[in-house]
Image 1: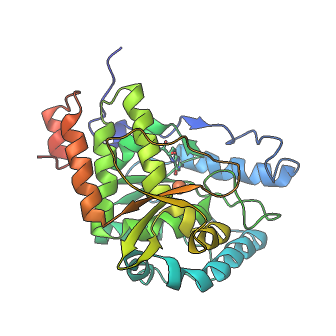
Image 2: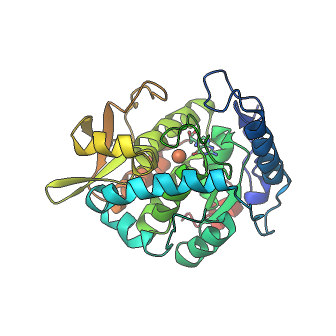
Amino acid sequence: AAVKVPRSIDEVDNGKVLGFSSELSEDHPGFQDSAYKQRRMHICDLARAHRIGEPIPRIEYTADEVVVWGTVLQQLRDLLPQHACKEFLRCWQLFDFRADEVPQLEDLSQVLQAHTGFRIRPVAGLLHPRDFLNGLAFKTFHSTQYMRHVSRPDYTPEPDVVHEVIGHVPMLADPDFANLVQLIGIASLGADEKQIWHLTKLYWYSVEFGVVREGDDIKAFGAGILSSFGELRHMAAGGARLEPLDVFQPQPKMSYKDGYQQQYAVLDSFAAGAEQLKAYCATLHHTIPLDVRIAVGLQ
Ligand code: H2B
Ligand code: FE
């Protein structure tokens, strides 16, 4: 069957959520906590009901949830100045995060729109890869809004609001990075299953676990590194192999659960990464309809 190419963000479905969302698996830290599951269900229902153009509902986070956020924020504050890339540190200042208040997606979305045109759309959990990637083409970042479980502030098996807000949001305020991310999204429009899988891995090895050269140093820009105390220390200690990112090559298998990453992809700059992605887009044989090309600003 022909792949449907969305013509605007309204045609990207935010409802196909994989795993977790309602039923947590046995090894999830919140598996035995029925109050936690109910809380998540409530926040997930809000995400499902959200419509493009409406403000994102504000969540009144509980005292436990605020403690989790504050704990992670305090821990990371000690490591980020030394190990995050300069773009992250510059954009971080736009947000003024406080340990006693979980940021609201609506406020973050406003800041992003002013700086790069990216917007946030709430989603109930791990979104289907095609829809997630298609959203990026329309400068839309699908973000979860629920909090990881209070028993494990340092760990989440899935995206949660801490990961999105610390790992992804500041980077999306940088124009070169935002452009790179949008290009991954554009490559996904009309892509076949094999290409979607390739792009999922490219996303993983850049947006989630990418590092960038700054002189003789290696700094983190991947959200999976920036939002994890353990992963940041792992990177700083040289715990993973560094391989230059080559978007044309098959990428290694992704590992989600077995500890820290064994490999990070290295970029020389976000602009250089974007050039590679443009070249990759040009090799894709699917055709993106003219009105969609115009809508996403593709020449
Ligand atoms: N969904 C959500 N909510 N957040 C993500 O970071 C995410 C996703 N990443 N769906 C996607 C899949 C990624 O793993 C690739 C593009 O499939
Ligand atoms: Fe992520």
